[in-house]
Image 1: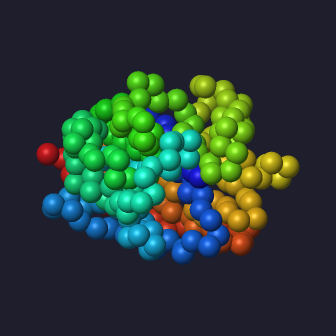
Image 2: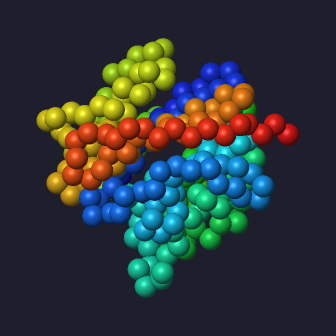
Length: 243
């Protein structure tokens, strides 16, 4: 249950990610600066499994993951690996190309179905899909925004969010418009909204990554389960690493 969009221009980009979760799930830990193989990165943490859904590193590479609810069932007798740990394993990569190379040897069947994306300043965004049993991990040829998933009536939810996105004229899909999109709630269809509400689940954070030549910024706005208001944003910055 998540929604992702982005904006790119020349040597910079902005990425927006709404994280939707069951209200019974433990609150995430806010983003902090960490390091992997000497590469600094910023990420929040899911305390249930210790992984994450989104990160950006000093090379300006962003990696994140969405649950793919339309995927085929996997072998429930196996103890599946954490999708959030997969994102962390990619933290020191320097490029989208390196992410793709590492995923070539990924034992995808050991994970629940997912959509994994990566983007950087110099490379086009890329999306990989693990459909579950009966399919393989594949790189999608076309990445069409918004990327969105839902455990509740997924086809209806995705259609609703895509229709709202299409209401933004193509030439006006700038950072301000995308932020408004990710903050939007439709009171009559709150379960399908980008910033969604259901009795058992809701958007628990709105995440924004901004990358420019000098720095990478992660802005995290949490919304505790059962509330209607977001808390004050947490903003974390790291300098860009230029090799």
